[in-house]
Image (cartoon, rainbow, N blue to C red; front, side, top):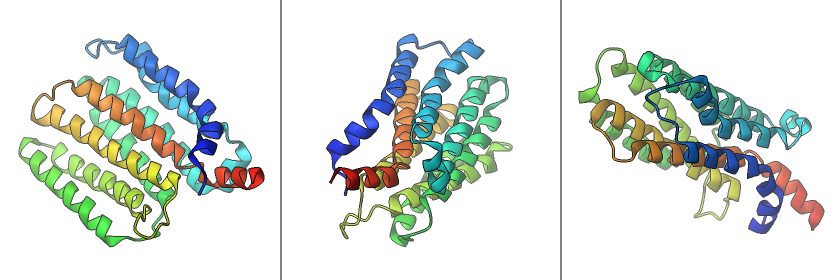
Length: 237
């Protein structure tokens, strides 16, 4: 397993723009009541920086690893979803939902179907079912099924991320842990969005949503770079 010191040395500098742009978002804290292209840019900027983080590993790396390409594509669709959600009060919420649904499909494909880990699937499935059951009385019209489909997709993504983490068998890596934590935080972020939009106001909802969202995307992006770090560790050995 690659040591944490190697990870920090190799990946830390590439994430500096992401951390800086995230700080800019929280410092400016532009009001959501007056959406604009500038506010959309500030919101999307941390995800753009994660594009650069992926690209910083080289086109040869992306070309050789389909999982990394899928995660980069997922980040691109996520930024589109972010932009649509800036104007969600103007009827673009479902557009943002679609973009993030595509992202979850791409992330699920990147995480793969091995190991299957049906127990993790049952646990995530139960959590997803309970979440939908709690939201269902507040849903109406197209959102009754759109939210259901979305929960199924993000739940599937969460299952594939969690399934790869086999702590009992000592087969885990820091990137699998990163994917697992990222998926869980993404589910927390989206559930907070749903409860706040459809059920009742969640205290400090925007801060909770964006903090968990940015952390989730960073961790998922980090999960793509295991292959290169293994190669680096071998060269340093």
